[in-house]
Length: 330
Image 1 (cartoon, helix red, strand yellow):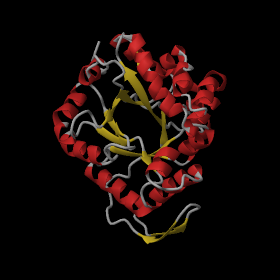
Image 2 (cartoon, one colour; image 1 turned 60 degrees about the vertical axis):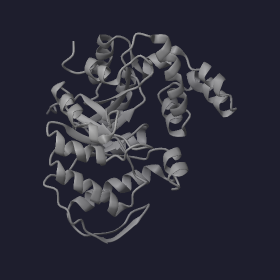
Image 3 (cartoon, rainbow, N blue to C red; image 1 turned 45 degrees about the vertical axis):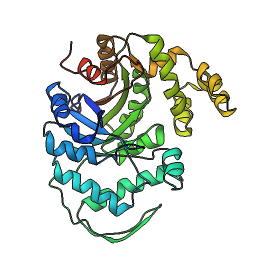
């Protein structure tokens, strides 16, 4: 039997620019423009839940998701309460995305040891399944123990649990124990390899593939490439992303940048990033060219996008970019 493919869902990353209290009209316009989803992130800005809670009340047309909440930075019971509360506020419209995050966010910024990321994410996924069942949880997981916690909030609909994944181990976990995978920092062509692992582990069951796609709809290629190299260097020198791109087959291409970065020569590291890599990882060009590239992500297996507008061209206006990339544009 052939599985019915999941619908394509165009989404946007939140929070949007400006203070949170000012976003109501913009969220409504997102829905008017044809965006179906908004996906929050959590690193050093707004937390992952508050922008979605406000959107839950303001704009019922939008589906809400986290991409991602780090598995390490909330205790199990607190994590379950946050998930259940948002699922209760937006029944059937919320998906929780969980990931290991990185050693920088977890260890340097939050003071939590970044150890056994695979097991930690797996255990949080399993615990949330147990807690959201409504039963009392008395269980020893590999990375923590819960003794007698029972959720006092019972959402009408249990939210899907998605796993942020880069390489094979976490991608297979997303397929086996999650409802899908969340991916980022990859090209449209890379999607085929990533989705292939998920589909293989899922055994034919359709799984959601959410992809954060970094976009700058500008034809000033020189400015975009120059600024994008700072973002690429910042991310791809983080160990988890370096290992991911080595797995994708970019080890030889990125080794000069890694070597210069390790030696403390940031200028040489930036210079070692080829323009071709920027063009693969950052969607830029005319709005029509950008929309065509975004469609390639869908064509290669992404089911849900979360566009992240990068201000790489100083003349680019964020909201004009949102409108230019909208499903109703063109």
